[in-house]
Image (cartoon, helix red, strand yellow):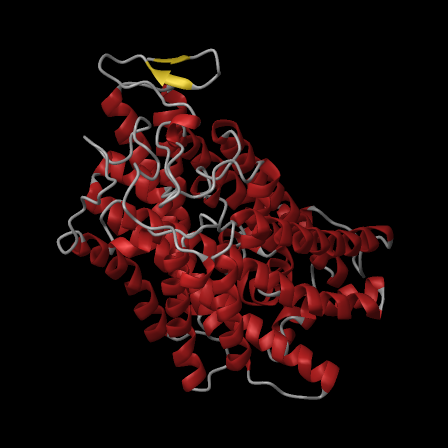
Amino acid sequence: MATETNTGRPTDAVAGATPVRSDKATDAPHGRALKAGSVGVLGVMFFVFSAQAPLTGIVGPTAITMGAGNGAGAPAASLIVGVVICVFAVGFIEMSRRVDVQGAFYAYITEALGARVGVGAAWLAILAYGVIQGAMYGLYGYMFSGLLAGLTGVTVPWWLIVGLTIVLVMVLGSRNVEVGARLLAVLVLLEFLLITAFCIGVLVRGGGPEGLDLAASFSPSVVLSGNPGVAVVFAVASMVGFESTAIYSKEAKNPRRTIPLATYAAVIILAVFYAFALWIVVSYYGPGQVADAARAAMQGDTSAFVLGPLSDTLGGWAGQVAGVLLVTSLLAGIIAFHNGVNRYLHSLAIRGAMPHPLGNVNRHHAPFVAARVQSVMAALTVAPFAILGLDPSLTLFPWGGGLAVLSLMVLYILCSVSVVVYFARSRTGSVLRTRVMPVIAVLLLIGLVAMVAGNFDALVGGDATVATVLMALVPVAFIGGVASTYVFSMRGPEAPEPGPFRHDAPGVGPATPTTVRNEEQQ
């Protein structure tokens, strides 16, 4: 049975259970510790929002969502997915109160299903964050190249822009996380303001040729028309990164309050915001005409499907500003996913499931070795598309996004199963929050996975072979992670006894001989 201390922190009253340690007790020495107390609720939320890259989420996939998906019914997918993720988050947050490391899925699944399954899940997470980062790199390079050509008349290859940006992001990833939060906060606020101004403008005008009609987008018959699975893919993609709230637990101020608040707030705000913004786009074109307009845009510049109405509503300046913000939006998302992968690599290394050097941090308390390795991974993801001369906006972006969504939904299912197993074994926690809601989440997520898999070929342009290969990477990554546990010892110098992820265990371990590198040694 769980009780509460006078600090409001839950602690197990089960016989033999070790009390929850205070925040100070979990502070680790400089050698391999991330900087504690550097980010609050808003800071963590901005990392989540930047992972979505709000302007990218509206401009990038909307033409595909409505043209190849369910047309005017696309906005409802955001609300449906938001509800599913809120149900999932109930158990996720309960688990975060007991398991206190920055490994998130890896930690939770390991605690319930064992270290080997946990590492398989971590590899899935790294695959998901890595490929979606690669997808954003592709669209970023494509948009930035076009922006430069429009402003200067000089055409710079998209892959050259991406290469230079990979180096920049690696440097940012080697700095203190608070610096990144400040940068992302400015970018995200500008994006939200521009999109909100557009929405208000369309509302004031009374919509488009067919006015404002909620039923035309949110009635069941419209939502289920066409290919709703395509809309679900991008709706899930718009939420990707909400789980990163737990990854920042070691750097959050009062993590037991910060992480739950940031998680629920981020999911609700994103679901409502995306649904509303997409409905405004539908209203601008008209429910009966929006699908045809989207399909026409798919034959040329898909971003014009949203940027055109934005310029028409607010003025030509808005389209130009949006073009710049779209590039910075993508950059913000790239930085966020870079940080997420870094922390997974760092967490695996300090637990003995990855090479030990990946756990090293510098004097900024940032996992700089992981940042370098992850940057090489990003370059290898982008390189084949550059070498083969493929259009990254039509290949790398949708392929990576779809693969990431599928990988993460499998992780959500494994995590929900872990919540049920963990709390059933310990006989603690609310039955509703730790058994009923996670089971409901599993059923709902299986339904979404089926929809995504069933529409994957449409997502990649109708190529069944590409769809099959990409989907096969999900089980391959998981099996590869499990197999890797037979290579690495799984007993890092900081792995606690008896299990690696109890709250009584230090988040990043005791002092080690690892040297803190100075600027000159980095």
